[in-house]
Structure formats: structure tokens, C-alpha cells
Length: 362
Image (cartoon, rainbow, N blue to C red; front, side, top):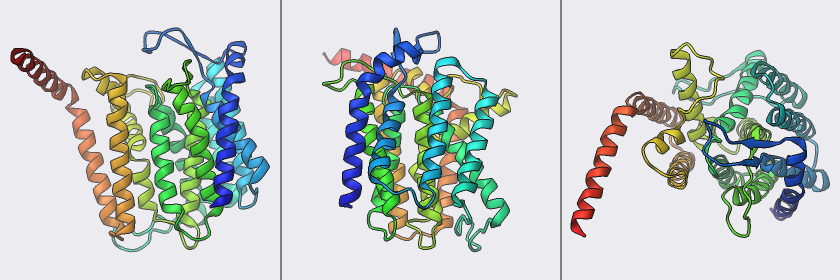
């Protein structure tokens, strides 16, 4: 743990230092998020927060950590993904190119490292679900693509992508630290967590940071890519650190948000890759909450979901019960989204009535 801590601190320090030269670089390279009709911020904001996270992790790992166990392949794929994300931030690559690039990198990661999902555990209560030598890599590549994009999709208000990422990483560490034989996974999770903190503080403009910075596609894609790699390694190795079903709870909020959005778009006959303003944070904003209030509420929900997953793991609640509970929560979430506008009308009426009562008491 001492070794993991030193690597994490080094990653955090490098990420912090790299934030400053990356700011002028963003202006020269066109890595800027320019305000438009879909965005609430003003002016042009550098899209280099994710680059600082990657630089911190990459340099720290290159200096202090091992490349065995597929980690060399992981870092190479991460580098290529970050470069693609940065080019997309600056030049807006076609969606089909981005998707097939992610498929290719997922395939290289899976086949090059030899690490993939070979079982889902006893999700249905009838025994362990084995995937086999063919289905395992295919499902893993799909999981890599899904995880890579879900953090990108939820990156819509200040601090949100960073917060749900930190929640997932903290949950991972809670499960990894007591486990035996997961030193590399613990080191990577801790290094990623420390590297994220400077960006997260800058994104929220927590003093002494005064200038805002966004994560960008490069960062959100890298975070999702790293988390799915950690989750696969932690749930599939012989004596796994935790069960596959627990992984769902650690990333419940971005996962549910992504799946719900894709289902709604598909029902409308729209492209699932088309951007819109129907995400969870958009709904909170339309309900009258501020960005910071929406951030706190969604982050608390993410913490509660992760805590439920960890509690289920520690209490050895049968996997099929944890899976059924997750599915029921998702069904409830979809129902709320399906009736969200009616619920928003009721909520706004309640808030107006509450404000009037408060004014009368004064």
C-alpha cells in the first residue's frame, strides 16, 4: 500500500503541475469549448483537464509502476484513445470514426492483454454464467465501448464527471485494499484518483484555482476506459476482489443515464450517438435546481448506489438478488424519466407554494 500511495501522490503532483502549461497550449491548439445554444457557460474554456489526468497517471506509471499483466497494452491503448479524444475536442471527428476507433482499441486491449470477461457470476440464481473463449472477448469489447462513452455522456455540468468518477474509484479502493493479490489494480485506482483531484478542483474553481477547465472528450473517454479495465481485472482473476454484479453498483449513475438515453433515442428513431439535453443533470436544471445543487444531489445518489453495492458484497447478498435490485431500480428510473415532465410540473407547483408560504410567514 505504501508503494501504491507514493505512485498516487506522484500522479497527483504531475497532474497538478501539468494543468498550468496546458492552458496556453489549449488556446494554441484549439482545445477550447466555445459557448453555444446548447451550453450554459460563457466564453471559451480549455478542454485540457482530462489531458492533465492522463499525463499525471502516464508519467507516474512510467516512472514507478510495472508494465506486466497487460498494463503496457492498457497504457498504449489509453494513449491512442486520449490522442483521438483530443483531436475530436479540437476538430470534431465524425461519430462513426470515433466509434470504430473505440472498437479497434477495445479489441487491441482485450486480445493484447489476454484479459476479458469470462463469467458474470450467478446473476440469475441458476449457477455461474460462463461466456467462453469467443463470447467473452466480444462482450468485453462491447463493455469497453459502453464504459468509455458513459462518462463522456454524463460530462454535462461542472464537477459531475469528476465526482462520479471519484465515487467509483473510492468504491473500488474500498473493495481492493483488503483483497489479496491486487497490488497493480490498487495502484492504478489510487493513481487515477489522485490525478483526478487537481482537475476536479479546477473544474469547480475551488481556491486557489480561479480559471475553469473542462475535462474534454479525451479525459472522459480515458476515465471510462480505465475504470472498465479496473473492473474487469478485479472481477475476473481467479480469486476475484469482488463479484461482477458489484461493479454495476459502482458505476450505477453513469450506466443508468447512458442506457436510458440510448433507449429513448432508439424509441424515437434517432441516432443513439446524437447529443441532446435529456440527461439526468439536464432534468435537474429544468426542475429549477442550480448546477451546484444538481451536482450534489447526483453525487449523493452515486455514493448511495456504490454503498449499496459494497454492502451487498460484504454481506454476501446473493448475486441474483443484487442484480434483481439493480434492474428494479433501473425500471423505476425509466418510469420516472417517462413521466418526468408531469412530475416536473407538480414539483414546480410545490416549490412555488412553499415559497409563498415562506413569504407569508415573514
